[in-house]
Structure formats: C-alpha cells, structure tokens
Image 1 (cartoon, rainbow, N blue to C red):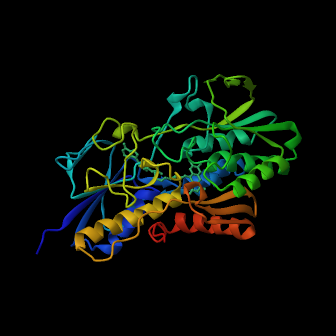
Image 2: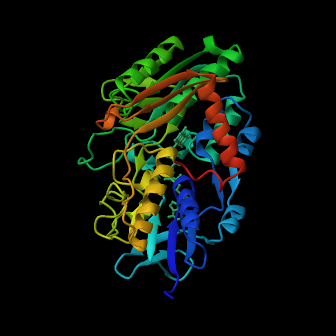
Image 3: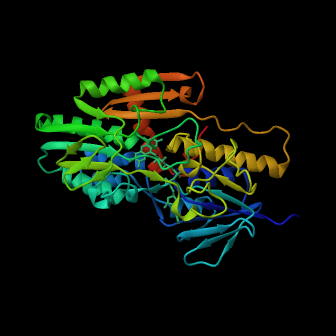
Length: 396
Ligand SMILES: Cc1cc2nc3c(=O)[nH]c(=O)nc-3n(C[C@H](O)[C@H](O)[C@H](O)COP(=O)(O)OP(=O)(O)OC[C@H]3O[C@@H](n4cnc5c(N)ncnc54)[C@H](O)[C@@H]3O)c2cc1C
C-alpha cells in the first residue's frame, strides 16, 4: 500500500478552514495526514467586525470569536501554532519561527493579505479601524461616547502588479461601506445624526467597483439618501492627526476609521512562489503555474478576483478537487473557478442589499435583491459559521 501523503495548510480562516474541510471530506486520516499552521488559535469572523459601529464592544466580540482547536480536533488534523516565515518549493518544506522544517506532499497557501499601514505617509495603526478584532473593539468603545463633528471612513489602494486585469483599485470594500452605513443608522438611533457629517474616501473610480453598473448605481443612490458623501479617486498622500491630504485638497476630520491598503502576504515576498508582490499566481484551478504541488486560495492569490470570504471558500473547493482529481487520476476534470462578486451589503437592522454579479469579469450574471431576506441570510450565515465551524466551510 502506498504511504499516506502529507498535506500542509497555511492559514486557518475562511480559505484554510474550507481547504481542511474539503480534504477531510475526500480523504480519511489513513490516506492523508494534514498539518495546519496559523499564528492564532482563534478565528475572528471578520465580516462581523463592522458591528463595532452599532454594538457594544463585548457583545460585538462575543459574536465573532471562533476557537479553532475543537474544529481541528474534529477534522483530525495536526495544528501548529506558529509564525510561517518561508517555503522552499524545491525541497518541499515550510519554515516556521519555532518548529523544525515541515515537509509536504501538497501545500495549500491561505495566508491572506497584509495590511499596508506603511503604504501611506503618516498612516499608522493608531489611526483606528475595524479590520481586526482588537481594533474593532477599540473603535466600538470610542463609539459609545457622544459623537459629533466630521467622521471619515477611508480606504487605501491595493498594492498589486499592473498586469492584473481587469484593474482593481481597492481590495474588499465591505468594511468601508458597511461601517459607514451602520454608523449612520446608529447615529439616527442615538438622535445624533445631525451632529455628524460622514464622508467616505476611496481611491476607486466608483464604489462597489467590481459590481455591475446597476449595483453601483443602487449603492450610490443609497448613500445619497443617507447623506453620506463619497469622494472617489481619493489617492491619499498623507495622514495627519486631524487631516487627510488628497492631491488637490485637504480633508479635516474629527474621527477616522481606516480599512487599510492591502498588500500581498509579507512572509511570501521574495520567495520563489510569489509574484514579487507577495501574492501567489495560480491557474483557474488555483494551482501554482510553476509548482504543481502548491495551491493558493483566498485573499493571497495574484488575481483581481474579489478578496472576500465567499471567494476563498469556493476556491478551496476548486483547489482540493483539482488536487484529488490529479491524485486519483479521475476522468472528469473538475470545474475551474469562475470569478464573480457575491456580496451582502448590510444597510441597517433588518435591511441588506444582496448582489451576485460577474459582469466585471466579462460575464452576464446580475442578481440584486434588497430587503429582510438578504439581511437574515447574512445573519444566519454568521451565526451558523461561528457556532458550527466545520460544518460551514463547505460551500458550493
Ligand atoms: C471588517 C471586514 C469585513 C468583511 N466583510 C466581508 C463580507 O461581508 N463578506 C465577505 O465575503 N468578505 C468580507 N470580508 C473579507 C474577508 O474577511 C476576507 O476576504 C477573508 O477573511 C479572506 O480569507 P483568507 O482565508 O483568504 O485570509 P485571512 O482571513 O486573511 O486569513 C489568513 C490566515 O493566515 C494567517 N497567517 C497569515 N500570515 C501568517 C504567518 N506568517 N504565519 C502564521 N499565520 C499566518 C492569519 O493569522 C489568518 O488566520 C471582510 C473583511 C473585513 C476586514
């Protein structure tokens, strides 16, 4: 009998967890041993962090924390709580900060992107945001004080090679747009809306840039009605303590919430595996074009495809089935990944805009629905994912 193979999965959030689930669905522990490496043993369900704008800090954090050890045990995988520092694709080894090199037969990279706080002069972590748990908690705490003045929600560009086609200017827009909308709602509830001016700054030529023109128009209209000003093409030159410098003007603010610029995974830069920017090139089956034993899924891939949780989960299915197809020499090749935006924009309690669109990527699909059903679908997904991780990383 052939010796069991060893899969190594780097990263344990949307992408990595879905890879683990699919591998275990297709291979028993006797057929495949699996090691997962992540620097955290708790996953933060990041889509839920936008509730820093309308929920008390402790309640918000309780709803997004997922302990990973029970999931790893259920999946019968070995977990390493460590920092990944490099790969040698020639010897097929992964290097970490405190364990000996880990050999792999197949490697799945799902380490996401790195926040580019250093990409804009003056910008730093203390400018606040909601993209990680500790930041969202702090923002939620500050929101409980009497808000007034000018509140700015800003995002920076995605740091990507010019060959990406179609061109994208920002990564995931969910945190930027949802947090502004939820803050608007919260201010109305607190009867403070008239005391606060809200502005969004984005380097993209329009909001919801990878959605269809119809969705973009709907989103613009929504923000107009809410009196939230959107400044597009906002290429921030410098960030100060009370001002943001754009090429032709300065925006003064009283408070700011940043969705930082997105960079490729820091630890991958300069390896033989990345594209030179920290992103991993892949085929449409998520396989590395030069290293067939390496797959990448989720935010880390070198494509302008949506950097979103849904994308990571779908790509995990594609990657694992492609590897299994090669291993088992099956006749029917699995379908490749078809890029599309699947997005539920939370607008306020009981209200959300669902859109599914591939027109940005050259397709014709365009579905849009606003209302309670979209809202409850997103709520249900979060509750089910957080309470039952392990059942849900499987995604069609
Ligand atoms: C506030 C917010 C709201 C969002 N809302 C939505 C939404 O509504 N819908 C949606 O679809 N998407 C949303 N997203 C985007 C979504 O969260 C990401 O696209 C998704 O998390 C990407 O998953 P991933 O597994 O590829 O990478 P990540 O989630 O970034 O996970 C990478 C993992 O790798 C680990 N890792 C990285 N480097 C190392 C290292 N060197 N050593 C060890 N471990 C390492 C990290 O600890 C992490 O656990 C939102 C994002 C944010 C920030």
